[in-house]
Amino acid sequence: MHTLIPYAAAPGARCQQALPSLRLPHLTQLLQILTPGACLQGSLEDLTPVHERAWAHVLGMDGADGLIGWAALDAQRLGPAAAQGPHGWAWITPCHWTAQHDHIDMADPLQLGLTPAEVDTLLQAMHSFFSQDGITLFDQPTGHARMRFLVHGKVFKDLPTASLDRVSGRAVDHWIPRQPQAQALLRLQNEVQMLLYTHPLNAARASSQQPSVNSFWISGTGTLTPAQAQRALQVTPAQARNLRGALRTSALQDDAHAWLHAWEQLDSTLIAELLQQARAGQPLQLTLCGELQAVTLENQPRSLWSRLQRRWQPRALHDFLRTL
Image (cartoon, rainbow, N blue to C red; front, side, top):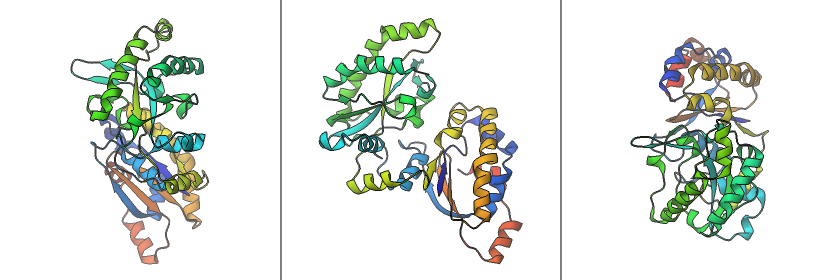
């Protein structure tokens, strides 16, 4: 079993300050048993966060920055990929932008709380705009509670895009694609923004004091070889699990109290189970991810002297997490 935990170290100042008060007894004990293995380095300038690169590696989907091919994998699951030719796949995520004095902020789209009826309304409203640009917008929204759409078109082929996790709750200006092939997408985005500005859906949301849907984000671009797709689709939940949602919201909002609570819940449940497995000598891998680094720890046989050294030279948990 390979378990991956993104946002094990949260980037926000409040969460960083709260690290010394984090109490994770099961993880502390587990770190004394597991052996550090692969270490994946990332950068704050990467389009693909290090936790997505680490998960792609687990699935056998390694790719260039911003070109992992997540949408192409969704297309393989849905079945239409073979019939759509060699063009590119992408995710389109409806979102809320707020214009500031010198930049544009994007709220976390997962917090919009769109209903299934609202998602269907957006899909119908946007469909003709995308089709005019040779982009197929599929009727099967995928992902987080039908919060994103799968699209296919020539414009997305080999177009690097920033992960949604890279821009949620942050300024988007730096991450908007500026390549020549993306100019058509910028125009399309402006057209959709004008459509949504006066759309009845947003009038109804405003009446109930909900944020408007006034733009969309493009992500998940990249291609997969047949071998990569086959391997990724064969990885089962019994072999690998990605706990992306466990710490994500509180980390992105820099809500230290909620992040500490979520980590402690994780420690008392999943980490406690992993600790029992490690003590029983069962093979396991645990990858802890921050913004700059993903460290994989493995349950490997060690000598008695090595075990004693680990026991008598423990590393403070918050010091370890701070390095991620």
